[in-house]
Length: 301
Ligand code: NAD
Image 1: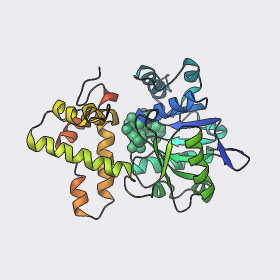
Image 2 (image 1 turned 90 degrees about the vertical axis):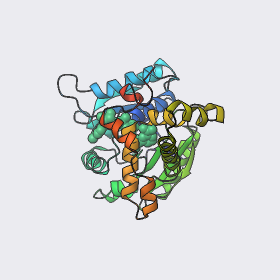
Image 3 (image 1 turned 90 degrees about the horizontal axis):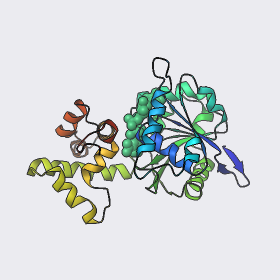
Image 4 (image 1 turned 120 degrees about the vertical axis):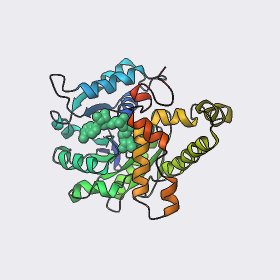
């Protein structure tokens, strides 16, 4: 498992992050800031510039304020690539973290494609917001399933200390223990064990409160600014006002989280609570996805 020292601890010298979007690029940025070399792989782009998507993710990282990367030296620890041409890079990593689109089929297909390339010692993790971790590993070998678990960072991953750790029934308990120690000691996080239930703990609670606020806004004709004023810094929640949070998360990702949560519950009340608000559906349809697309409820400054 990983590079282990005495006591079976996880030692990550080199990691791979798959998906260079909002979360993947920032997770790579934070690990690199702590001295961990990172392969940052996205889809291959057509044409000569095959690494364009991962490079874009890196550029976005450089523009974020406050910066997720702490130094130019840290930036040099991240190598951009694509999953078509650079699978062999996975043979030299201690940890793989997946952060691609929140879609179970896409994640299953990715694991099927990558499994033969991943170093046998590597811990393998998904950053899913709430899809079934067990379901993602379906069809994979026992050796894969024993090293596979959810490591769910919250956005922005450099600053939010909560990380949910989601083992499946087949994850090796030694891996679960080692990952938690690594998160606490090396990444400075507060790992919380969660069961593999729809949207785990944090998003289950967080999504309900966002949904209720969105419904109240529409019912009472409140403005984005008014809601953010009373749900933001003046209430002691720096930067975590409702619509700023949605823009940061990405409205498409929020929509995926609602849909996957609704599809995995038999409780009609819960399903109603997770219904996609018309305003969110309309904005996603128009490509207003939040900060990553240059605009959502707010335009990017
Ligand atoms: P995003 O849309 O910003 O980025 C996804 C990236 O994955 C894109 O760059 C896309 O090109 C790439 N991608 C898609 N399919 C791929 C594939 N098969 N191989 C390689 N790359 C592929 O999404 P995001 O917001 O970064 O979310 C990524 C994951 O993290 C999702 O599972 C999401 O639920 C989870 N997450 C998101 C947040 C958040 O606040 N946005 C927080 C925690 C967890």
